[in-house]
Image (cartoon, rainbow, N blue to C red; front, side, top):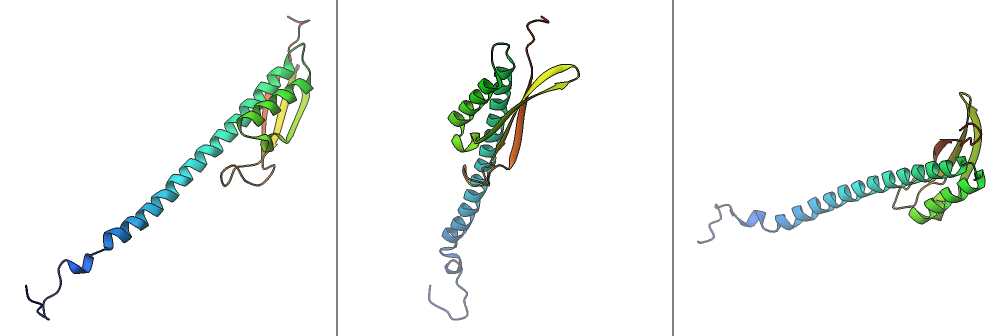
Length: 137
């Protein structure tokens, strides 16, 4: 076990490299995990806003309710689920399509880019419902 100048060290050249490799791989895996979580959050926010718009349209389409009731319900559902920032721009309109009256609740909302923060009013999501006609039923 002498130190021969012509002999190459067999184990000394790799000493400590496992820690450096782990640090690089762990940081890369953390970024991938953070990206996957952010994609899940984006899909959750989108589905929640669409579902709230649909619920608001159903509420507004009932015979004893108005468009104000549908807007209020959509706003409350969005605020409780993902935050007030996502319920800032809600419009409720009625139109005639194929001979029936349809209520549309449209929500312009931000896309959550980093956590729940992102540019304002980027998504334009909506829900529709046929207006209840008690005279026809």
